[in-house]
Each structure stands twice: as structure tokens, then as C-alpha cells.
Length: 139
Image (cartoon, rainbow, N blue to C red; front, side, top):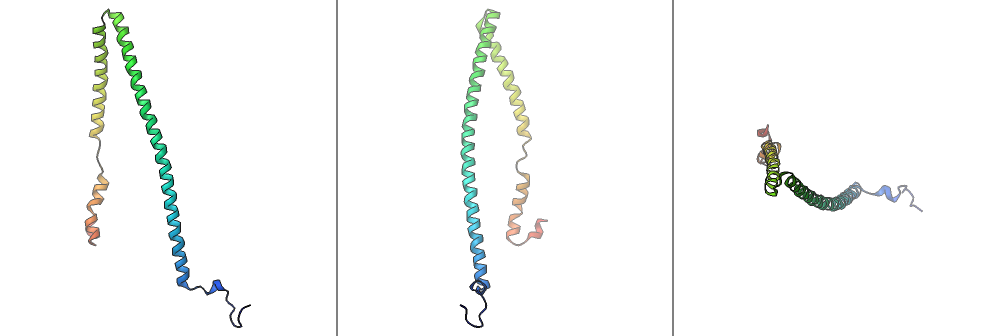
């Protein structure tokens, strides 16, 4: 039973400071839980990426072996046609040399198109002025 003249319930008697403290505590707990969730999701994604990377590496090794054995088969087939394994080996080597040269030229063109991080470099240059309180110099 309440005292005469006291019509407020205990929850109504909480101070604004207590309410703000509870809100701050709840926000802090929520942020910690969200960070824990993000960490767990990142660990799971990293594990999947690691397994996928291993499978890609194994597939690349298998593909390299396929190319090796196809090259040997072409070498022997040409050797039968030309009656010379030496010359057929040279033909296969020249073919692979042409493939390597074409790929190297394409790679060089791709490397020349790399522009780096122009936007990041531009914004990083603005940091010292911002730290000193001179943001207007960044405009």
C-alpha cells in the first residue's frame, strides 16, 4: 500500500540521470553485441574464404597438369607427323612462347592502367589541416 499523498509508482520516481544511465548502458551493451556478431560473421567468412582459396589453388595445379600433359601429347603427335621428336618439341615450345608473350603484353597494359589510390591520397593530404582546425584550407 502507498503512503498518503504518494501516488507515483517506483518506476515513475526514477531520475533523468538514472534513465540516461540506463540508455547509455543499453547502447553500450548493444554496440558490444553488434561487434561480437560482426566478429563471428567475419571469422566464418574468413574460414569459407580460406577453404575456397585452397580449392582454387588445387584447381590451378590440376589445370597446370592438364596443360602439361596436353603439351606432351601434342609434342608426340607432331613428332609422329614430322618423324622428329626434337622438331616437334621446338614447335610446342614456340607455341607456348607465343602464348606467354601475348599474356605478358596484356598484363603490361593492365599494369599501366593502375592508377593507385588517387581519392585516398587526396583526402589523406587534408588530415593535417583538419587536425589543426584549419578545415577551410582543405576546400
